Length: 165
Ligand SMILES: CC(C)(COP(=O)(O)OP(=O)(O)OC[C@H]1O[C@@H](n2cnc3c(N)ncnc32)[C@H](O)[C@@H]1OP(=O)(O)O)[C@@H](O)C(=O)NCCC(=O)NCCS
Image (cartoon, rainbow, N blue to C red; front, side, top):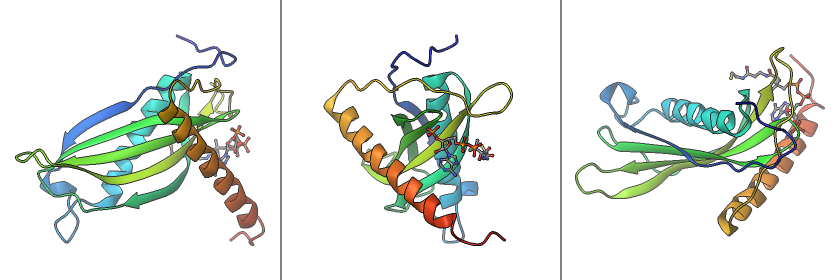
């Protein structure tokens, strides 16, 4: 169903749960960070898609912190939500929780933001709805998203001064 880009719209968490298999491991036997990023990217893109009902592409990955290693056999929960919406872009907060399958111990292993742009049928950036904020937590996450946006703009402004390859 098309989404009206003038009407504020909320964004709910998208949660993906999986198990870490041996082929997801790196050379030291813990989960490969590139695979964690892939899971975050896919999960976050679904959050954008549900928010604006447009195809959205990853424009940038903003700081992502890998706080602790994930073990093979852990249950992995990836959750993402749009926390800031611009004219055509969205900033998504993405969190990864690892759960020991036998003790039930859960820990936030990875946390960060990703930046997506919604595209129209011709592949050009297109408007997204304003983000509706429903709680103090959503307002806090939005404020952090605003900081991520400002840091991204500053980074791009200084990068544009560099010579292109
Ligand atoms: C992302 C992309 C669509 C932006 O296109 P563009 O014509 O440069 O876009 P514009 O300059 O008109 O900016 C559109 C929006 O994107 C944002 N944007 C553009 N480049 C960005 C970047 N590198 N990082 C973060 N945001 C970016 C702008 O801030 C703007 O946001 P706003 O409308 O909310 O203010 C284009 O660069 C692209 O297609 N990149 C490749 C995407 C891709 O293949 N991703 C990996 C596979 S999914």
